[in-house]
Amino acid sequence: MAFTSWADFWAMGGYALFVWLSFGTTYGLLLGLWWYSKRQHQQIQQQIRAKAAREQRVRQHQEREK
Amino acid sequence: MWGSMFRWLDPYAKPETLYHLCGRWLPYLMTLAIATLLLGNIWGLAFSPPDYQQGDSYRIIYIHVPSAIWSMGAYSSMAIAAFIGLVWQIRVAQWAVLAIAPIGAVYTAIALITGAAWGKPMWGTWWVWDARLTSELVLLFLYLGVIALSGAFSEAARGIKVASLLAIVGVVNLPIIHYSVEWWNTLHQGATITKFAKPSIDPSMLWPLLISLLGLALLLAALTCLRLRSQILIFEQHRPWVRQLVEQQHEEQS
Image (cartoon, rainbow over all chains, first blue to last red; front, top):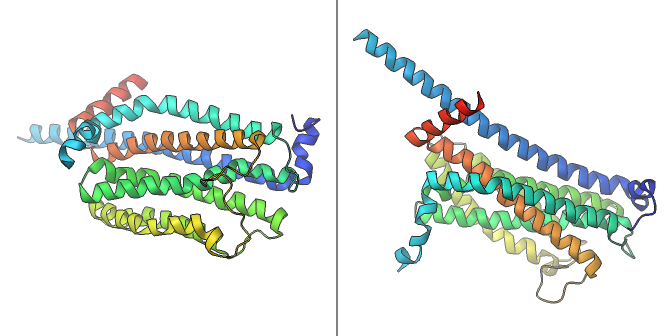
């Protein structure tokens, strides 16, 4: 352990701003990308489902028209 | 000869197979990536000794160096995929370009931001227009260019082709980034671990750095899996297997 207390750890020898700015933005960006990619994956599935449902409705309608 | 040499790769080029393969790997890769990255970072942040010159500010290295290395690693993979996609018309390789580009852009942004936050206390400035920093910024613009071009055409196939071409041409920038600290006078220090000689860093600092490096590599692989699955669904959405899959998942959720 390189630090004697939690306060010591958070202070980072006077470089707290720069160290925590670095790690904060890093994890912020990485989590953001993960969340965005996961949400995108779900949205694509929803869109495909909606499209399939619409095509089926159109088909049913066309058959009734005949 | 080329045909038989790469025959064993054929099943992976089939979108459906690759979709399921990525799905199977994703949870393991993601768990391993998070565990490795946290281990390396916490070790580096709390347990490694402070630097004799830079004190505790040097701990930024545990995120700066891995993200910078993999910003270039991701670009190489993207360019290789682009080349395979253009030359052999392998569609999953073309989609991989689209999957990797945003991850590479985020890694590059992280390398630039952490570099600035390290430069301020050590060099006295957030930014200088020197060779290393400028060429890494060009890398970010190359990624953004690939992303923008791939979506700039009404015909998706053409967008991918143009974006792939840019990705391949942009490879020129990689050796420039790597050797910039040798070719030009710069504030940036020389290579610490990416050289053939012995790393110029103590083992107590090197181990957490290597673990963090592995962590970001695994995360790159995991995010590529996740994003490639999305791309496969987009481009295969009219195929019966996708329709069936999407319906099945809907039923499982409800």
